[in-house]
Image (tube, rainbow, N blue to C red; front, side, top):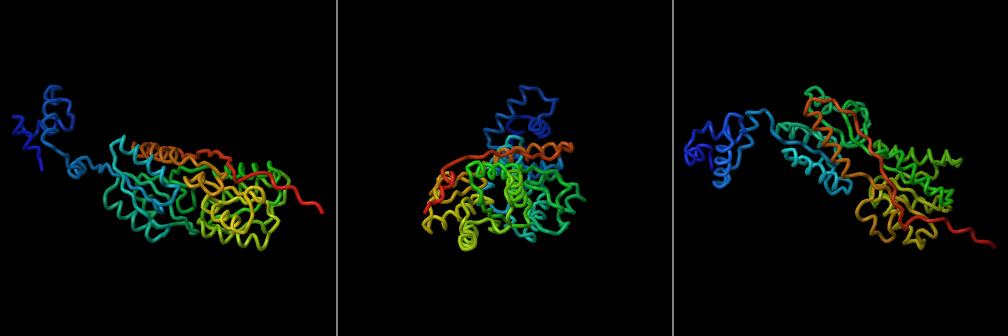
Length: 340
């Protein structure tokens, strides 16, 4: 491994001079800096980031905690975070919580043991008003950004989130505009604020249109394809007059559509289906899904902007980004009732 001493001997200068050049100290001439930097590059010198961190008390590391990188919502978000971190001289350590509170606490502690300068966390939602690891982050004053909606246990941190209520409201309005009057909603995990916001948007649109909010048309569907399939089977047995299904996310929508199509129904002629998220597979599903395009990349960029402000000593406000609807082939006007 090439050391500062090796560069100094080759350049005919002191080790202190080499150190100052690599730190871009102002008292070294531009000519000397250029010569030593070129020599260091030719010799294959790689700075010791650990030693630099001990000197500056900055690791130039950021911790990112997500449920799992395989979750479609995180792919572009993580890309944006890593790209922005690279531009600002940081490296990102990614850890998976797997939606388990105990594991989340463990990975956060491991990241803190690596002396990360800041954290970005897509939290594991729980019903408890407090979580010890988040209380610890507050006490230690660790710069932390919540990626997602606030809940009581993380309400004191700055957050970056999507305006899910307004987006879901727009989907229901779209279906009402197509003349649907019996719209089922496949809701997500009750512990998750984003799922509650999407349900609230659906209810608000129905009320404003003068339509009854019928809880018998609301089915608990979780967040996966399999749970969407289960909810669709339940709906077909309990509410056969439904003409449209609004799902809490695209995976649930695809699961529901699988069951509807396999039961002989045609989408959208017999029943419309809408999702939320605009996952990559949504556009190329058996029937391309009408959905909400979440600003995934912009969320990642915004999270990094907020974190950089925290690292700089500022106290930025939380960010709430709008989402847009994408209308595809899975929604249409309901077929007129048969006569006779």
